[in-house]
Image (cartoon, rainbow, N blue to C red; front, side):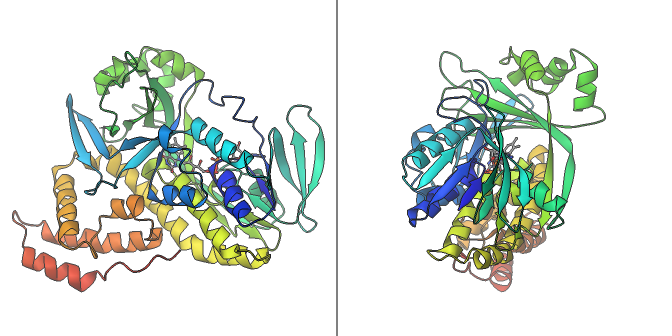
Length: 446
Ligand code: FAD
């Protein structure tokens, strides 16, 4: 089996498949992360949640990552010069973990490199499909520039949101792709450590919600934070308006995020070195060329980052495909079942990720939102088998599929709205609504 892309999905799938004794070759366009730092010294981080942790554990890769993870049990809102901590959940294990993307790649690569039946090939770019029927890939060695053909029995496309394999299959008419670009982009900055320590409490994902835009910051284990500015691409307070005026970025930070601005001396230099990037959702159908190629992770269904689930979802893909394939050799059947089982869940998380942007940048400031959030946690305490806040289902309950989380979340939202029409909560009514409308959470789908 050949995997194109040694990102989180490609490497973890290789580890899972190899555990069953399967031989796997991985082809990655970038240099070996054990020797090169891909982000030029910057630390770009990701939030790891229960779904990702479960898969990393199954791949025997979690223990090596633990020391690099910074726990984030809640959000810290920066509003009107104050900081307000809001816990994500109510159990000690309801915690997200911030981890540097570069460290994750490096450690997963180290884990894969110790497995004899995994062959890692860096600096090898897939240019597309030469022949789908014959399983021929067009490849290029990025150091020598030499182009060559690679024959493969079965190919997994784990080459990310801009997948060359997906483009190749699309050009051959084997699948259709729709990319919905968001009208907002993002830009990443560093908030350096002071005297080797974090400038704010590190046990939180810091958010500056400002209505039509926001800043977030995730802690790194070297004492710094990585801040991400999400902003409209056009209009007032947009990346276009910032680009038009040299001091506009600093002025925006001083006006909207003064506590952060004071700690970011490199703001302008970083903005020049790392321009804004766009965001979007990739809808692709089907995900496979029967019997030959299967796309998974971002290559199949890239989503916007506002639920912090893209990687977690990509890792879950790997676990499901590995379970469906088992020790057998019917790749076509496993790929077909994978697509049938997985698509409702990836469609659901794509939708929830878009919805969560509004929540993060705007709703969190709303007293009614905060009241309903507190009520949801109270309902969870009283009816733990039936009422679990949607955010918690997505982030902390790997046993509940995304599609179920979306469906149950809609029922729960209606209950919260009905119960918060007056000042006091009618707990008798609450008990009746919850037991009538929400069945106990059922066993995991996979
Ligand atoms: P990728 O991580 O994109 O890996 C693809 C790999 O394939 C790369 O190594 C690439 O170099 C390689 N490749 C690409 N093209 C080729 C080619 N032609 N030939 C050979 N190799 C190739 N997700 C979370 O779960 N939590 C978060 O907090 C989070 N935050 C995010 C913040 C931002 C700003 C963004 C943009 C995304 C965020 N995500 C987050 C999403 C997450 O980054 C992705 O969902 C995840 O990386 C997908 O993993 P993947 O392995 O499918 O693809």
